[in-house]
Image (cartoon, rainbow, N blue to C red; front, side, top):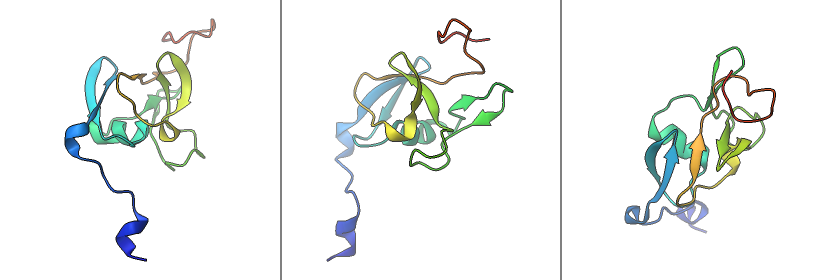
Length: 106
């Protein structure tokens, strides 16, 4: 078995996927996780904790839960376990959500 065959081959860069992150248009490669797209976009934290401490993807395999974001209106979604798709809307949480369970800022 060739070593190269063990790794995922990247698709043609022309076939980029477009998503929106906090109102900004971002492109990613098909097959990328949302966490990888966020890190490649700016390197900014994925979210801010209740104490305003920056958090971002750490393990990239769904164990640490540091990459929680809102995807298409669904809060607390693991960005590292979700593949990007065209038209996806991502919002980085900033602190606690409101008591109503909505995605509002505190």
